[in-house]
Length: 117
Length: 115
View 1 (tube, chains in turn orange, brown):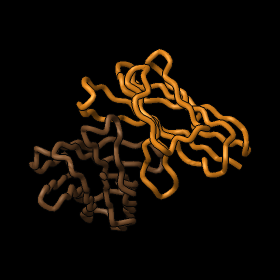
View 2 (view 1 turned 180 degrees about the vertical axis):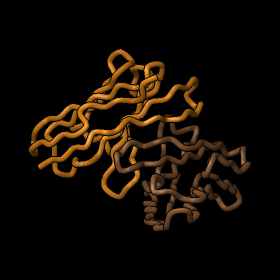
View 3 (view 1 turned 60 degrees about the vertical axis):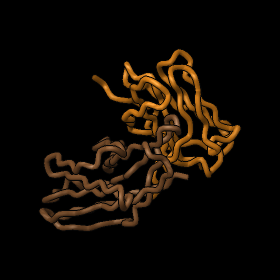
View 4 (view 1 turned 120 degrees about the vertical axis):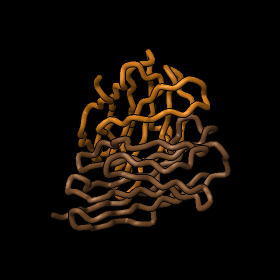
Protein backbone atom coordinates (compact mmCIF):
# COMPACT_ATOMS: atom_id res chain seq x y z
CA UNK A 1 0.00 0.00 0.00
CA UNK A 2 1.69 3.20 -1.15
CA UNK A 3 1.38 6.34 0.88
CA UNK A 4 0.58 9.88 -0.15
CA UNK A 5 2.92 11.17 -2.83
CA UNK A 6 3.66 14.72 -3.88
CA UNK A 7 5.41 16.15 -6.88
CA UNK A 8 7.70 17.96 -7.16
CA UNK A 9 9.53 17.68 -3.86
CA UNK A 10 11.28 20.98 -4.40
CA UNK A 11 10.43 23.98 -6.54
CA UNK A 12 12.41 27.17 -6.98
CA UNK A 13 10.73 29.93 -8.91
CA UNK A 14 11.01 33.62 -9.52
CA UNK A 15 8.53 36.05 -8.11
CA UNK A 16 5.58 36.51 -10.42
CA UNK A 17 5.72 33.03 -11.95
CA UNK A 18 2.95 30.47 -11.64
CA UNK A 19 3.58 27.10 -10.04
CA UNK A 20 1.52 23.93 -9.77
CA UNK A 21 1.90 21.08 -7.31
CA UNK A 22 0.41 17.64 -7.51
CA UNK A 23 -0.76 15.29 -4.77
CA UNK A 24 -1.69 11.64 -5.15
CA UNK A 25 -3.55 10.38 -2.08
CA UNK A 26 -3.72 6.86 -0.74
CA UNK A 27 -5.84 5.09 -3.33
CA UNK A 28 -9.03 4.35 -1.39
CA UNK A 29 -9.09 7.64 0.52
CA UNK A 30 -11.99 9.97 -0.20
CA UNK A 31 -10.72 13.05 1.63
CA UNK A 32 -7.78 15.16 0.60
CA UNK A 33 -6.29 18.16 2.39
CA UNK A 34 -3.73 20.83 1.67
CA UNK A 35 -1.69 22.51 4.40
CA UNK A 36 1.10 25.06 4.37
CA UNK A 37 3.99 25.00 6.80
CA UNK A 38 6.49 27.81 7.30
CA UNK A 39 9.76 27.46 9.15
CA UNK A 40 9.35 26.84 12.85
CA UNK A 41 5.58 26.58 12.69
CA UNK A 42 3.00 23.85 12.60
CA UNK A 43 1.07 23.14 9.41
CA UNK A 44 -1.81 25.50 8.65
CA UNK A 45 -4.94 24.28 6.91
CA UNK A 46 -5.55 25.59 3.40
CA UNK A 47 -8.35 23.57 1.85
CA UNK A 48 -10.15 20.25 1.89
CA UNK A 49 -11.88 17.98 -0.64
CA UNK A 50 -14.35 15.20 -0.13
CA UNK A 51 -14.15 13.24 -3.37
CA UNK A 52 -14.13 15.96 -6.06
CA UNK A 53 -15.99 18.59 -4.02
CA UNK A 54 -13.99 21.36 -2.38
CA UNK A 55 -15.81 21.77 0.94
CA UNK A 56 -13.76 24.25 2.89
CA UNK A 57 -11.17 26.92 2.15
CA UNK A 58 -9.11 28.83 4.66
CA UNK A 59 -8.85 32.60 4.47
CA UNK A 60 -5.14 31.92 3.96
CA UNK A 61 -6.07 30.77 0.46
CA UNK A 62 -5.99 34.06 -1.43
CA UNK A 63 -7.37 34.55 -4.92
CA UNK A 64 -3.96 33.62 -6.30
CA UNK A 65 -4.37 30.09 -5.00
CA UNK A 66 -6.59 27.49 -6.60
CA UNK A 67 -6.98 23.81 -5.90
CA UNK A 68 -8.73 21.11 -7.84
CA UNK A 69 -9.49 17.44 -7.53
CA UNK A 70 -11.18 16.77 -10.85
CA UNK A 71 -11.99 13.09 -10.61
CA UNK A 72 -11.82 12.64 -6.90
CA UNK A 73 -8.37 11.11 -7.11
CA UNK A 74 -5.25 13.28 -7.41
CA UNK A 75 -5.29 16.99 -6.63
CA UNK A 76 -3.41 20.02 -7.87
CA UNK A 77 -2.61 23.25 -6.07
CA UNK A 78 -1.74 26.21 -8.27
CA UNK A 79 -0.27 29.48 -7.11
CA UNK A 80 -0.42 32.33 -9.59
CA UNK A 81 1.90 35.35 -9.55
CA UNK A 82 4.00 33.92 -6.74
CA UNK A 83 5.30 36.22 -4.01
CA UNK A 84 8.23 35.74 -1.66
CA UNK A 85 5.77 35.24 1.16
CA UNK A 86 4.52 32.09 -0.56
CA UNK A 87 7.81 30.35 0.23
CA UNK A 88 6.87 27.41 2.44
CA UNK A 89 6.39 23.66 2.56
CA UNK A 90 3.08 22.62 1.01
CA UNK A 91 1.77 19.43 2.54
CA UNK A 92 -0.94 17.16 1.26
CA UNK A 93 -2.80 14.65 3.39
CA UNK A 94 -5.54 12.11 2.76
CA UNK A 95 -7.98 10.14 4.85
CA UNK A 96 -10.89 7.76 4.62
CA UNK A 97 -14.10 8.73 6.33
CA UNK A 98 -17.85 8.48 6.08
CA UNK A 99 -20.14 11.30 7.18
CA UNK A 100 -19.08 14.95 7.39
CA UNK A 101 -18.66 14.92 11.15
CA UNK A 102 -16.86 11.61 11.26
CA UNK A 103 -13.27 12.05 12.14
CA UNK A 104 -10.47 10.25 10.47
CA UNK A 105 -6.73 10.01 10.58
CA UNK A 106 -4.93 12.17 8.07
CA UNK A 107 -1.83 10.67 6.48
CA UNK A 108 0.64 13.13 5.07
CA UNK A 109 2.84 13.17 2.02
CA UNK A 110 6.48 14.29 1.99
CA UNK A 111 5.58 17.84 0.97
CA UNK A 112 6.67 20.23 -1.75
CA UNK A 113 9.13 22.87 -0.64
CA UNK A 114 8.60 26.10 -2.56
CA UNK A 115 11.21 28.83 -2.68
CA UNK A 116 10.26 32.09 -4.36
CA UNK A 117 13.24 34.25 -5.28
CA UNK B 1 -11.92 29.14 18.79
CA UNK B 2 -9.66 26.14 18.87
CA UNK B 3 -6.05 26.43 19.89
CA UNK B 4 -3.16 24.09 20.61
CA UNK B 5 -0.19 25.22 22.67
CA UNK B 6 3.14 23.46 22.78
CA UNK B 7 5.11 25.66 25.11
CA UNK B 8 8.41 23.82 24.74
CA UNK B 9 10.24 24.97 21.65
CA UNK B 10 13.18 22.60 21.97
CA UNK B 11 14.21 19.82 24.33
CA UNK B 12 17.70 18.34 24.33
CA UNK B 13 18.42 15.04 26.03
CA UNK B 14 21.14 12.45 26.11
CA UNK B 15 20.32 9.04 24.73
CA UNK B 16 18.40 6.78 27.14
CA UNK B 17 16.90 9.69 29.04
CA UNK B 18 13.13 10.07 29.14
CA UNK B 19 11.53 13.12 27.55
CA UNK B 20 8.01 14.47 28.04
CA UNK B 21 6.37 16.81 25.55
CA UNK B 22 3.54 19.02 26.76
CA UNK B 23 0.39 19.81 24.79
CA UNK B 24 -2.44 22.02 26.04
CA UNK B 25 -5.54 22.55 23.94
CA UNK B 26 -8.55 24.84 23.95
CA UNK B 27 -11.96 24.04 22.50
CA UNK B 28 -15.57 24.63 23.42
CA UNK B 29 -16.66 21.40 21.81
CA UNK B 30 -17.39 18.31 23.83
CA UNK B 31 -16.50 15.97 20.97
CA UNK B 32 -13.03 16.32 19.59
CA UNK B 33 -9.95 14.33 18.71
CA UNK B 34 -6.32 14.81 19.56
CA UNK B 35 -3.34 13.67 17.54
CA UNK B 36 0.42 13.50 17.76
CA UNK B 37 2.60 13.56 14.66
CA UNK B 38 6.36 13.23 14.26
CA UNK B 39 8.26 15.21 11.63
CA UNK B 40 11.81 13.91 11.13
CA UNK B 41 14.38 15.95 9.18
CA UNK B 42 13.11 14.42 5.94
CA UNK B 43 9.97 16.52 6.40
CA UNK B 44 7.15 13.98 6.21
CA UNK B 45 4.63 14.08 9.02
CA UNK B 46 4.25 10.64 10.55
CA UNK B 47 1.06 9.79 12.44
CA UNK B 48 1.67 8.49 15.98
CA UNK B 49 -1.64 8.42 17.84
CA UNK B 50 -5.28 9.53 17.79
CA UNK B 51 -7.41 9.91 20.91
CA UNK B 52 -11.06 10.98 21.18
CA UNK B 53 -12.42 13.22 23.90
CA UNK B 54 -14.40 10.43 25.55
CA UNK B 55 -11.47 8.15 26.09
CA UNK B 56 -9.17 9.31 28.86
CA UNK B 57 -7.27 6.09 29.21
CA UNK B 58 -3.56 6.49 28.98
CA UNK B 59 -1.88 4.59 26.19
CA UNK B 60 1.47 2.95 25.81
CA UNK B 61 3.03 1.84 22.55
CA UNK B 62 6.54 0.54 22.91
CA UNK B 63 8.69 3.39 24.21
CA UNK B 64 5.90 5.91 23.63
CA UNK B 65 3.17 6.77 26.10
CA UNK B 66 0.44 9.37 26.21
CA UNK B 67 -1.32 10.98 29.16
CA UNK B 68 -4.70 12.56 28.35
CA UNK B 69 -6.31 14.69 31.08
CA UNK B 70 -9.52 16.52 30.19
CA UNK B 71 -9.52 18.34 33.54
CA UNK B 72 -6.39 20.23 32.54
CA UNK B 73 -6.96 20.07 28.76
CA UNK B 74 -3.65 18.37 28.28
CA UNK B 75 -2.44 15.52 26.11
CA UNK B 76 1.20 14.93 26.99
CA UNK B 77 3.58 12.57 25.23
CA UNK B 78 6.52 10.74 26.81
CA UNK B 79 9.36 8.98 25.05
CA UNK B 80 11.05 6.51 27.37
CA UNK B 81 14.72 5.64 26.96
CA UNK B 82 15.16 8.05 24.05
CA UNK B 83 17.23 7.12 21.02
CA UNK B 84 18.97 9.23 18.41
CA UNK B 85 16.29 8.22 15.89
CA UNK B 86 13.73 10.02 18.05
CA UNK B 87 15.27 13.34 17.05
CA UNK B 88 12.48 15.17 15.24
CA UNK B 89 9.84 17.84 15.62
CA UNK B 90 6.71 16.57 17.33
CA UNK B 91 3.33 18.18 16.72
CA UNK B 92 0.16 17.96 18.73
CA UNK B 93 -3.05 18.61 16.78
CA UNK B 94 -6.74 19.06 17.52
CA UNK B 95 -9.69 18.07 15.32
CA UNK B 96 -13.19 19.28 16.19
CA UNK B 97 -16.09 17.48 14.62
CA UNK B 98 -17.77 20.56 13.19
CA UNK B 99 -14.68 21.75 11.37
CA UNK B 100 -14.84 19.35 8.43
CA UNK B 101 -11.28 18.37 7.67
CA UNK B 102 -9.33 20.94 9.60
CA UNK B 103 -6.57 19.91 11.98
CA UNK B 104 -5.35 22.68 14.26
CA UNK B 105 -1.65 22.13 14.97
CA UNK B 106 0.56 23.42 17.72
CA UNK B 107 3.87 25.05 16.88
CA UNK B 108 5.77 21.85 17.55
CA UNK B 109 8.56 20.79 19.90
CA UNK B 110 12.00 20.01 18.53
CA UNK B 111 13.54 17.00 20.28
CA UNK B 112 17.30 16.58 20.00
CA UNK B 113 18.74 13.31 21.27
CA UNK B 114 22.51 13.14 21.46
CA UNK B 115 24.53 9.94 21.86
